[in-house]
Length: 433
Image (cartoon, rainbow, N blue to C red):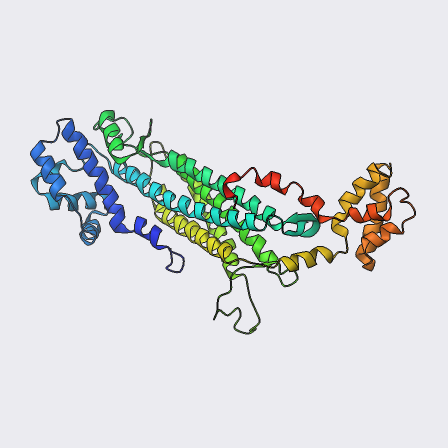
């Protein structure tokens, strides 16, 4: 990941030092299991535990010759131990170490992402509660539909982020498995009992049937679930982008002192954070195709997945972590203009209430739905084209005989549309102020 979008938390997980540290943890767990099984003498095991280490620069030097990173790593570790180093990597193949260690790296990364999503969700939930009765125009197809509340709009995003957390938690559980089943998964040189003990020591489950690798459907699900999470963040960012448009101007992302929106137009306040999140979501979706293509490897494995994963795994975590942090910043500093929301409800001169009028004509006037629709639509189109308030047009419409003026006026009450807001919020008792 380029420095602009990398995060300290993810970088510390995926840097070379930590990667090799996880490899060493797998190797040491295997040595302990072999020692407990009687295959590694106590003195040698003690020597291994006390002296095993590695040097990233030295590993790179050895790899220049061997052209194999795991061999280079094992050789370097053996160098730090001495004669007992012959027990390092006993009965293992490279992917036993790589895939088991990768599960640890992926699990640590998922924990970081999930915790950051929980923080964002709390921020969104707090804003939803604060504005639960703030009326605003609901929009479908980008067009005013019926009134809603800004808090209810945000509650929808709160619920979606909750589903993202649930999906990612399940994906983390599925990816947290290890394997030490050998070259083609037969345990010929390392019995299942050693694998079970190593996974127990590392806090991992066991892949019940592996080949030389843990099958990549697990990893593909993780990548696709992260892409879905990215799309959820994008949907929230896209909403803010629309609301910040000059013609709308109902909510704005934070604009700090000294910030400049344009090199040419000093007046500009652009939704650059939300636009950035929308763009980065495209990157996450791009990772799903190679992750899915990694599932179908030749026979018991090939290595075509390796180069892909070295790039997309750390980059996807940097990306989604950066996006989540950015949206938490946006939502924490969101500027909400409830007066502008009220003004925007009025710009169509009552058109948002056409649905309720339609129902009233059916229920109170006794009209067929088709006739009621024709009356309402004709008035609505005249309101739209001639900018005459819809209520005035209805009051002067001779086809409406039973509904009196006050009854017609009552149909334009915004409170009617917010009467069940509390019922919806009651489904999320954890966010109550």
